[in-house]
Image: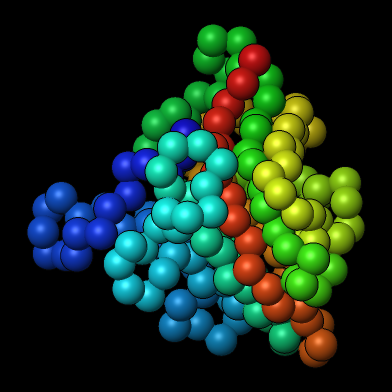
Length: 174
């Protein structure tokens, strides 16, 4: 689905442009979304702290009076029941210096699953998070978006958490 290897440092209007923050839509330019994906200058994808391959997604968040989300609109695969797929896997890396907060994944907007650890933002090293697709309770034959969020969805807190997370190797598995 996204191992972040296809994202590049080519700027528009070049047709080959595939910058990470143009695909994973974050809170840049908004006052209600505290997520910022990618680096401001090339390399746009993280190239030092990676789980697999050569790149991962750096994800900075600021939940003071806002929530943090980054959303990828899917083109393929939309049918998440093909080939016996039953789980979503993503690799997560936080830091002990992050404020303790929860992370979540949403499909098609409102179908949210929270990580079991309410302080998942403080997980150190790479941690695989495997989610049973049935838990989302959505039509898995037509999944059109995936969102990674930090905090409590749509419940901003005045003293919200801040920090940096890394995500890599988002895959569908049997």
